[in-house]
Every structure is written in structure tokens, then in C-alpha cells.
Image 1 (cartoon, one colour):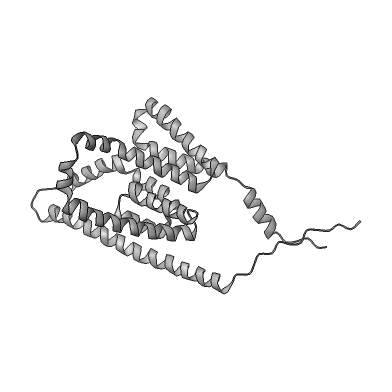
Image 2: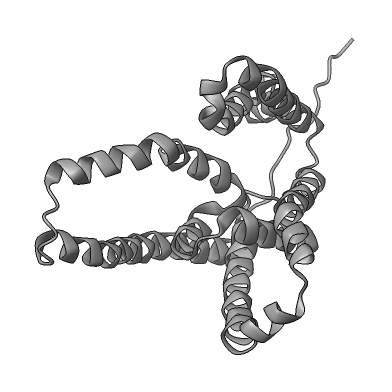
Length: 258
């Protein structure tokens, strides 16, 4: 009885259009990396010009020891974010939008929500080329609307609008606006990601760290976000679905001789 094997799986040959699109995306990533690095360096230099003038030319008698003490005091509080934020935002934004985000600021409460909504609206998966382009466009639009709204509602109408809003309403908005915004972003991210395993792991770790570990070890409070993010990455990588990898490897394996 003859043994027949399944026909080999063939992948469609790339078309001229797909090749051109890949080449254009490669040029885009190369140029954004080059000019993004330059603009970030220029922004860093410009931001340090003011403090450098005060230290070296304002005769304020600021010593190097004072500068290092101030730096270490800030690093002790915010240093963990220097590592957590890039790890957290890069899978959503991509390399090009990361340059935009860290130059503009307000990443978690403005730019990431805009990128997630844009990706979800066009059905683009975070981390894909289409998702990266959607993040770039969304951040550009969010920054433009932010500047326009600041000009109109703060620059022109700010004092008048604040005088119309009762103090109680301002206090309530200040107390609840950030949790409500973060909750909306979380739900949008879960819906767009559509990964039950990763969602359960991340939420479970957040609950355990926030409700059990931090109350037991208050000194870890500043590092709670870092612990959750890094632990989620490691655990999700360990428990990831390997069936897709097995399928790809089996399709790439050579066919046995008949």
C-alpha cells in the first residue's frame, strides 16, 4: 500500500507592490532612527542649557556635590521609570513613535491612548508595521489637538473658564479623571490585543503585587510597576503559545524523499 504525503506548503511569491512597500518601510525606519536620535540629542542639549547657565555663570555657588546629590535624589524616585517606560510603550508604539512620544511627553495619559484607539479603529495589530504607522499618525494628531486646545482653552479662555467651574467640581475631576482615563485605556488595550493569557497574567500580577506584596513590603512601592511589567514579560514568554512556532518550523522543514 503506497504511502502518500501531504503536498508541500508553498508560500506565495512576493509581489512587486509588497517588495516596494517593504523597501519604503525600511527606509522610513532608518530615517526615523537617524533623525529621531538627532532631535532627541538636540532636545537634551537645549533642556540642559538653562541649568548649565545657572551652574557655571549665575554665581549661585552650586558645587558638583550638590548637583550629584540632586541627581541621585531624583533617580531614587524616578530612575525605575527610565527602564520601565520604554519596555512598556515600545510594543504598542514602535520605534518611530517612541521618538515622538518621549519628545512630546504625556505618554501614558495622552499618546498611548491615542495610538491604541487609532490601531483599534483600523484593525491594526500593535507591533506590526501598520500598527506602527497608525501610532505615528495618532501621536501627530494628538499633539496637534493638544497644542490647539491649549491655545484656545488655556491661552485665550483659561481664566474665564476656571472662574465658571465650581471648586467642588474641580476637586472631583482632579481626583477621578486619571483613574477613569487609565481604566478606559486598559479596556481598549485588552480589546485590541485579544490575548486572554497575557491579560490574565498581567492583571493577576498587578493584583498580587498591589494588594499583597506592597502592603507587606512598603519599601517596594516605588518599584511595583517595574516588578509587574518585567514579571509579566517573563511569565508570558514562558507560557506563550508554541503551536505557531511548531507550525512554522514544520512548514520550513524539507520534505522527505519519496
